[in-house]
Image (tube, rainbow, N blue to C red; front, side, top):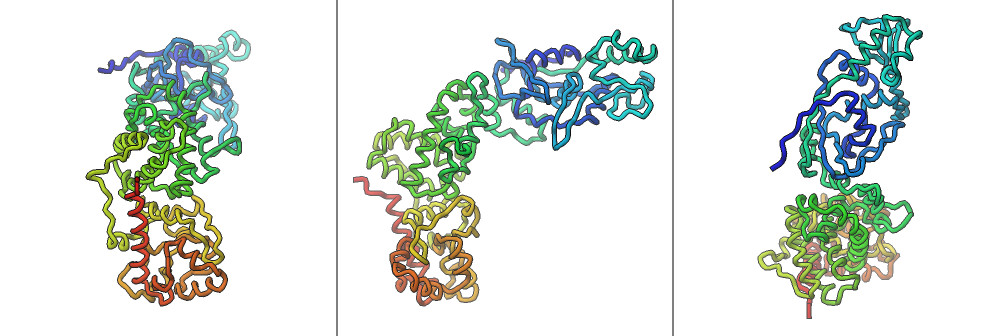
Length: 543
């Protein structure tokens, strides 16, 4: 059972002594310091008048999280060795504003320099005035003192500078600020997920912190120079300083997938609760191993399974079992049998829409399948078989973001599609593969043509009507022309057109009804061709 929260009060001096000594920190998942001088002046005015300003909530823990190390021009010290830290869960803007005034912070933000020394006390007003005493823009001719100077200097330094009446007011305001008793709530040694849940509820109106944000905070380590956020950014794009996923077209892999990769390596599970329980030191130690395995898995997906870019990967989650395989296989290349079993697993998971729900649980189950493949045993798919039919395939609408459609596109890429015009290899990239109207996705019977000349009941936007072409052909040459029209033009310039079309699973232009513009015939023939190839991959010859 969790300990009950404590409700100690804390004086102004004690609060900022703890910040100065490194005991109070702002976790990195807090939004940035956004209060300006107007809000800060109002806060100072409330303290001077003795108004309540709300409760500060702290999480007291020995967990070392990634935290804010600087406030403006002030560098905050590390946590004293062996002592707990108090992370601010609620009240960050208020605490930071007060600290900014006390330390005379100069902050550069949005092309503006904000100097928090420029907040003043109007000494012309009585100490019990209803008007705002603390202000950033005091009236002209008014006698004022900087709040920063008032808090950092002794009263004797003002003798001879201010009148006796002003000195008495300064003394009153110093006492009020320095003796102000802040209301606090301290939760001690709560698990990080509960502490973050508390933060979410009180700060963001129910907008939950992502698991990645929590793990970035939890695994941060200054001494070991480990920052998961920076590691993830460098994994995606290292700006030419080394290997990265952007170089091979896999820069869209999500941060949650990366966490799942390391989690299945460390505990064979990928659930949120399992990731949150991962040991920080093991996480840091194993990061290089997992990162290398991700690169190897991506290379394998591209070379063996013909997934050229990450936007064609049916699920990001597929990277998880494949990275696990390459770690557990000890750096060896897969055997012939393992290659066949890995390919079967890929096609099964993709065509079954395996990770459309309950991803974390299913990843844990599939790790057992990968363990079987590591032993060169065929995993069991009993009760979860993929049943493909010609009718189902030829009626399937094309949706670029659907796993099943992506799997069929990967099938097309496995035949290395070539340009209708000159038999050159078609190149693709993530930027063009996000939407169904991508420049690389071509309806072989163009939708514009079928809108006027459809000889069948088949929808124009069918998956089996999709081919992979380059931008120039799709948008400038083919457009809404009849297939017989544009293919005759290509035949004149491409003597290898018959071979070219075989790379698109269109084996015979006559038999597929292309010269006669027979859409229904084309759909049936190409559907059978695709079905044959998909079934080969689902039921490989294992020998």
